[in-house]
Length: 430
Ligand code: S3P
View 1: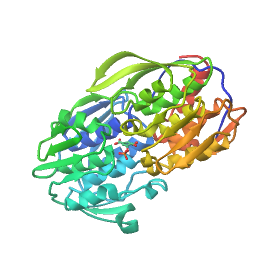
View 2 (view 1 turned 90 degrees about the horizontal axis):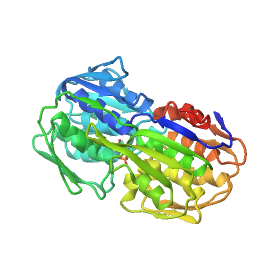
View 3 (view 1 turned 90 degrees about the vertical axis):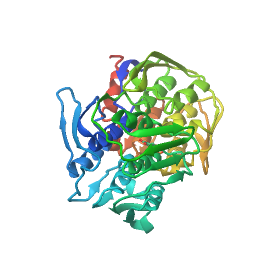
View 4 (view 1 turned 180 degrees about the horizontal axis):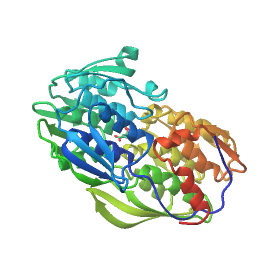
């Protein structure tokens, strides 16, 4: 439990933790590669550590380097061994779904489980198409929910037209496709984050992107490599929004990943009138990176929907907080996926902001938020969802009194030093 007080201006320069999606992928691809990989600036938070623990349980050797890097010695595509225990994915949907793709192709038995939040999240979106490829899954609720047991084996390639834009579905199937003879294809309705498409060829996979379709040809050998993970724009989002809503703030966030499939949050906030500048643009390990300067701004309401949704999918709790301070009614549509994240984020943000005096109308696939001038303080439950906890901490900076965030421990899944970053900016320091 943490108490958040109304805040003076946030000032200074911070870096945010490394990108969670890229760290998961680096651990997985390095574990399937031959030889040594060095992952520099990995995210050392609970979610990617669940992925690392899973591969250790399957015989992969990993150690820490002197500068915080993770060094993985992969045994190649066919080098995993049967885990002797249940694999615990913790709170991490990415771990569970991407592992389903890998485990589907292994000649052994494995079982996946997770925490209470993950055990409520839909898995059939990956186990369905992977079953079509030939894997066998048994799980709760007719195989829809964890714990799920997997009997993998030789798979056959498929063409899968996904009903949702999801990088987890796409990556799970492409991972399974690495083990197939022939071409596995995934087609999305909108483009989801493309870290897999950027990273897998660098490890040696044969992969082709064609509009909204991605194809992998199985059998190529993966080789270990040396890469550097940029800061996570999803973590930066909380301090960008904090700077925009707390009067007098000016915050510079250095070394943030700016992959165009992830920068929907910047486009949304700019359209709302935010004073955000992108500086020092560069490329690191095949990913665009920049520094982001955000200043207190007067925001206006907008309508958000369509292809920007997957490009900002994890940032909507933070967007909701910005919308609470915008002039007018902000409408979010086409975002039903928010209901199956670490919590039902539409319901969670509607309830939490509602308790602060913001009028929020829930829609099946989004919400309408009417901006206010002042927020009342309150007691907010994180629902075990790191992004709800951090968003409500940011909202609390502008509340009329002290707010309490219950269950803030979940922040450790993605942003272990969130409170330190906040304190540093409140102290105006670097
Ligand atoms: C992720 C994909 C997204 C995102 C999640 C991380 C990934 O999920 O919400 O936090 O690393 O592939 P979906 O694929 O379910 O949209």
